[in-house]
Length: 361
Image 1 (cartoon, rainbow, N blue to C red):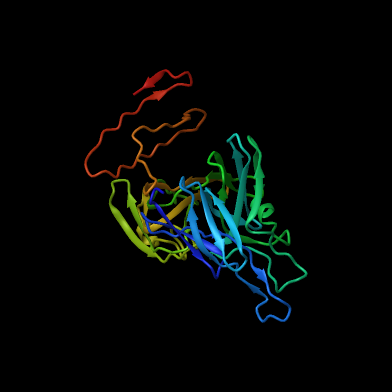
Image 2 (cartoon, rainbow, N blue to C red):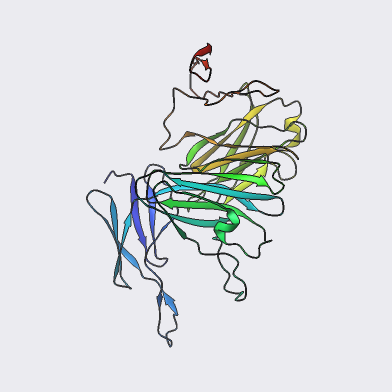
């Protein structure tokens, strides 16, 4: 009803495609219908339910899908998507995920798990004696106020227990007030940090802080969660806004573009970082992506979400809050402000103590 999306049935694949009319993105398809079993003598052991007709109720709350071959009707309600742009499970790293239902109603959480190439992690029919992965999508009910915490291995039900895999997770939930975050840590429990689940894509994303001094390495992850792909233009700038290097990486739908800033197969050449004393990375695409970074050495790890600057749902903020700042016992708090406006601007900063009294401006 609001004219923001176009829904089209794909009868061969038993899905409904959703097109964003503002960005022309195709998010992940909506699964409808069920494959039908043919007769024993039929040369087609399975064939589609054939969702041919799609219609919406006047209030836009429910989509009705008519499956022609199965003579069934699917009723599809509103859902809210979020993404874990990076999950890994190997001998060094693990990924944890936590979700909480803050609404007053039960929520249905559907998770779908993909490798870095956008292929769904699922059981291989060629190996009958081993179940490599559990169901995908996987439905998880969440009661009001309930928290669900797990690891990527437990969520995907990956087998055997020492197998390794990487990828990303797409989550759909039918209640708006469901929030979550994910963590990456090493198995020795020396390094642990994470970020919020990504809830929107953007055409301009900023990685606001990078670190490559000493033994530190910065790794950037760009995920195109849509069916259609987009090339990613990465620009490395210093803190004066001067461009140091640009590079383009091919992006495909559902694929994770993942690399270190420098080194073998890094995004930028090693020579660019000679004399480098700080900067940031801007990522530009024609269709939306979500981005994430982590920088680490052998003892420490920090993670940051990419900041969406330009996208259909991005609303620029004029007032920002840093909920905690410390400067004692050898610790310090660093704040990075990046301005993308056309002219100049003035920033007013007020530092308050834990009682709300202004200490400095």
